[in-house]
Image (cartoon, rainbow, N blue to C red; front, side, top):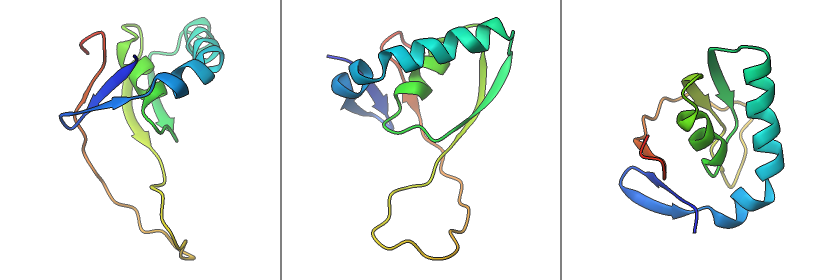
Length: 92
């Protein structure tokens, strides 16, 4: 099982991680190849790419930005800041 702990809750992301393993690997290799040191991630649920970036010692993840799921999309979505605590399987 692949899991990520968000705010003290373990999330099983096994299926998502397996489905996107190649895309995540390619992205990390591309960032390393470009010698990227810091990134702001845009859109990453259910936390699999966030976890991969967090575990990468060569990359500083400054923030992750995404639109939360809503039932009715208003014309304007006001920005909010939500701080989450994340723990990856590698302990980061």
